[in-house]
Length: 178
Image 1 (cartoon, helix red, strand yellow):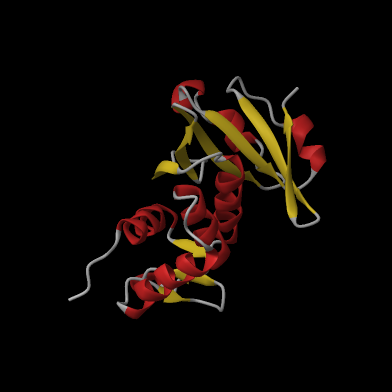
Image 2 (cartoon, rainbow, N blue to C red):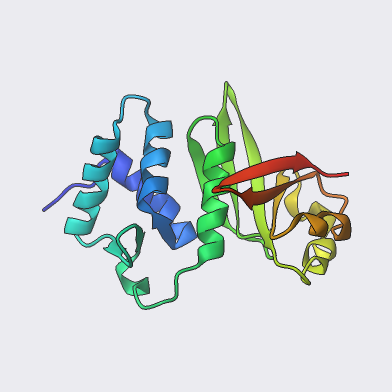
């Protein structure tokens, strides 16, 4: 019988909430968890999880839980995970689903404390979903609103503390609201 390591448990705990992840994301998360982990160590960790059937590859780079293999890949979730990794200076302490319209919330270690974020993907024409979210939905959280295009920034109005993110040239660019 194979014993799951703490690093593997960490990846599985995040995968339980996100349902999908790319290999490069898992490697980056493990390297933030422990600065002594190399990319090779992280790849071996992921490979062992596949070997014991705790995860399956949907493509050469994307994996999921075995029972979710036939579900479509949630590309918005993969983008939200990229943002989580970008904003986490150290390790991710916890990830939890929702509340809608947010993909998930996460708590990131920062110095001797922690910061809480929530990520929402805002498709053009659906800016009102953010405006309809009650302001107390994310008490203590910073909302990160992933926009498809910069012009959406002017149509999103909310009292929540938030920042915008836009993907450009393979990276995310972050800017303040207002």
